[in-house]
Image (tube, rainbow, N blue to C red; front, side, top):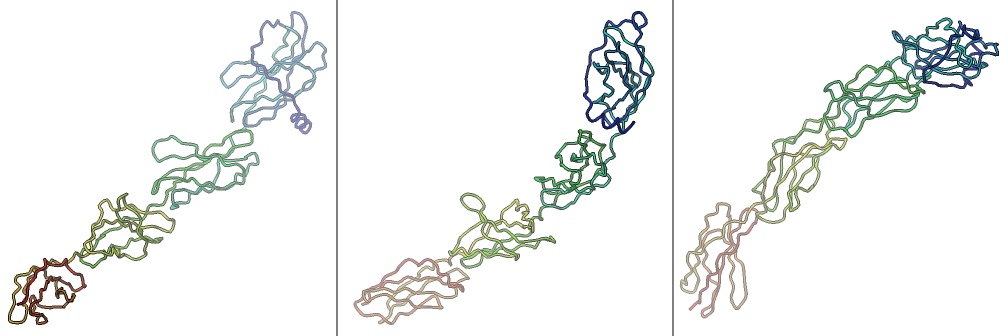
Length: 399
C-alpha cells in the first residue's frame, strides 16, 4: 500500500481552501454521511501527505480537511471537491511540529461527523554542516571550506558572516550544489577579523540550523619602514637608507619622491638603500618608502616624509687684492669654505683665455705683457670636483 501511496502522491492534485466552513447542518438531521477514521500519512519537514480509502457513497461530494496545531483550534485547510480523490498534501508547515487533523465528508451543506483524529509530527530540520574551516592570512579575503552534506535533499549552502560584534549575522553568499565545498569572501579590509557559519539549503528551500562558528582573519599589511634617512652631503645625488622589515613573504620596497602632483613612485628595490641621481648641486627632495609583500600588498607610508639634498656648490671666493709687481701680476683672494681643496683661476685678455689650478689663496702671474690688459676671476673646487660660482672679476693694465 505504501508503494501505491508514494506513486499516487507524485501525481496528486492539491486543492487549497482557506475559508472557514459555514452554514453546515448536522448530518443526522437530513442525511447520514460516512465518517473517515483512518488517515495514512507521510511527513516531511514542511509538508504532510495524506491517503485514505475512496468512499463509495454517492451522497458524498468530497471532503474537508481540518488542522490544528499544538494548543490551537481546528481550521479548515482544504476543500476537496471529488469523492474519488484519495490523496492530499498539506504544505507550508513548520519542521518538528505536531499537528492534528480531521477529514470529513460533505454533501452540499451537510457535513459528516468528525471521525477519528490523526496526529502527525513533521520531520525535524536537517542536520547542520558538520565540518567548517576558515583559511586565514589571505590578502583581502577569507576562504571558507566545509564537508558536503550527506542528505541528498540538500542542493546548496548559505554563507553568513559576523564582524565579531553583536549577534547580527549577514548573508554574504549562497553557493549552489550539494558537493560545493568552498567560498572565498573577498574585498575585505586588511588585518580584519570575521566569524562565519554555514546553513545547508534543501531543494524546497528549507534551511538547516547554522553550523559551528569559525573565525577568519585577513592578511595584515607589511610593517611601516622604519629609520628612513636621506643624505645631504653627496655630489649630485641623494642616498636613502632605512631598516629592513621583518616579513617572511617580503617582496620589495617602493621608493616614492615628492613632486608637483604629490608623491610618485620613483623606483623599486630589494635593498635597504637607494640612491637618487638628481644630477645637479643643491637639489632638495622629499621621500617615502614602503614595503611590499609577495601578494602585492603594500604597507603604509611614513606619516612624516624625509628630506634630503645633494651637496651644494662651495662658497664663492673673494679677491683681496690685485697688483703689479715688476713684470708680474700678484693676485690674493680668500675663502672661508672648509670643503675647498683647490682653486681654479680664470684669466682672459685679447690674446685669449686660460685656466690655472692653484692650491693656495694667491697666485703670481708672470705670463703677462707690458701694455696689455688682463681680467681675472677665481672658482673654489671641493674634493668631489664641485665648483663654486666664479668670483667677481678683477682687471689690471700692465705698464
